[in-house]
Length: 221
Image 1 (spheres, rainbow, N blue to C red):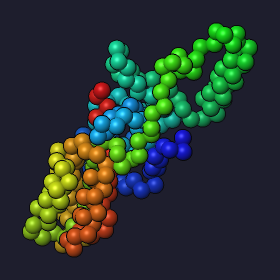
Image 2 (cartoon, rainbow, N blue to C red):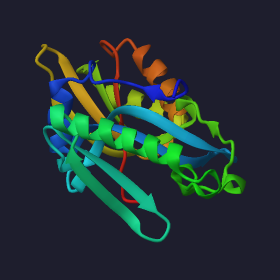
Image 3 (cartoon, one colour):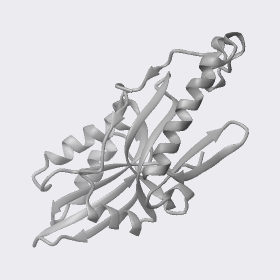
């Protein structure tokens, strides 16, 4: 767990929630784990962060104290499991279930216990946890700029230099005079290229403040 990338919601801004809704997305705090191959290296993605999800996905509409787990299986495809995840009774239920499992393991025949997660010992593998810089995702980027000719061209040039293509774009006037707000959705790309592009964008004299970056997942299998 110490190798998991964890990012909370403290930097999430209301304006980003509004832009996400305009673009057909909702923002949810997701925990994601999956096998992936990046540059020929196989590993495990293990990350927690706010994520833009298409509004039509069932998991995007899990509200309040409800939690949900979306599992993608080879044969069954995507399955969603939803239930209350907060409050005294759901928490107590989970604790009691853990105690029951521990008791069953302690009293079961050692030669006939079901292996953890039902994996046989000869099927277990020691795969590396991929660093967040090597994870591939789509991205939401919000940039505050000075409203003048050529600024958008500068941004797209930098993104293209890092091999990043744009899926959607919104440009609106800012509350501050002579400034504008640009929101970009990218196609899938390895995170280190997005970080390199952001560093170049923030160095432009036409850009004011830091670039807001959120990850996006289609969750369509």
